[in-house]
Length: 272
Image (cartoon, rainbow, N blue to C red; front, side):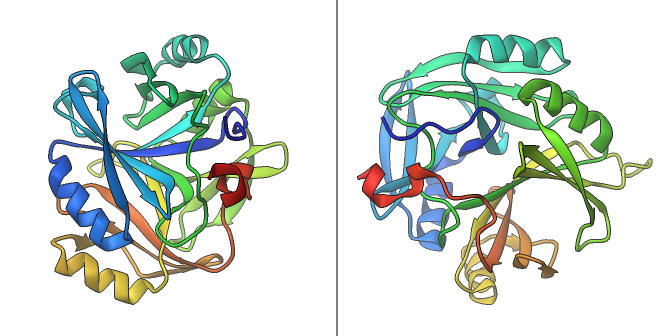
């Protein structure tokens, strides 16, 4: 087994879409991913990799996670997934995919938090999680965009034991907080305007690193996606929210330095 992630770290990202074939074509071209298929019960799971190292998954929304397109789901490491799943519900969440053993991986579950954001729980075994971080085409950050920042932070603090640090205003001039494990930031929380009539469900946003933001945005358009918010200058590089052809939101960032701390599972010597 590769090195485990700490409980509370985002360890995996998965696109839950009703059109997995379309999504595979889009992301293979955009990020240069290699995609292989794995059987998951009666459905097919698409495992995406770069240079032989797993970076993301694509699942069929017609068969998983309550039969709804959840978009990009961030999975968080836990020690005891059954206990964590029960706690997630006790705190006000909804369990949409009960803990399920995944061959050659571990055990995963999916939850909707009290404010509408889908996220996952993962107890890694033979696969700890992503095998690459902060590289072009790979995960580099996870952010919760929510109109209920205080209550949402309280939920995730209770579930994962985070501390929080106010990060001042974000580049969009909205309040921003960091979720911390000890002194290490593991995710962000962006406060959205949630005054009526702008009631917006919470959503976890997956950030992927790109070599050139401008060139990647041109590719997004050419492949049928849509740039939405940006470009925005951040302390870690220029970024832009986009929607893929299925309408699922992600963030592209021309990364200047790492956002996520280094992890042994992202070391080629460990994962190969």
